[in-house]
Image (tube, rainbow, N blue to C red):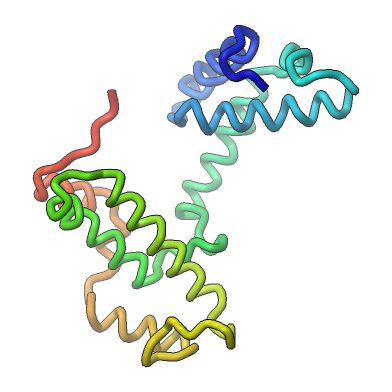
Length: 184
């Protein structure tokens, strides 16, 4: 589907406007994906092309559905427990979050490398959490496959892990590093 087409851009703009009215701020790429999925489903149901299916999309209803999912994810604490993401109170994830401000300083503000590092490490933490009984995973070191022992080891290394799940604490640490994330 051509995301640059006028019909697609019209639905995208209307959906983003409706989301903003609901106090939900999402990037256009995520909303474009939702539109693409809905257009695909409508086209399959009607036996038509996706471009024609765009005329059947109600931006208000789509925005409400997307906002509902976004609110549920926020309420659930960043989609806690969905693989490969570890649960939000995971000490390993806290250590990963805690390292972001220092990583920005060390990389000279290279946000790409910091995000890549966080993504890889969060995936790994999720894999470890989700597959604590996996006999084929030998990367866990001295704690072996005992997830509780791994979390105890990590908790001992970072005794105040819960603070890193507080958005204000994290934002302050980021600002103290000399970097901020601002929206334009």
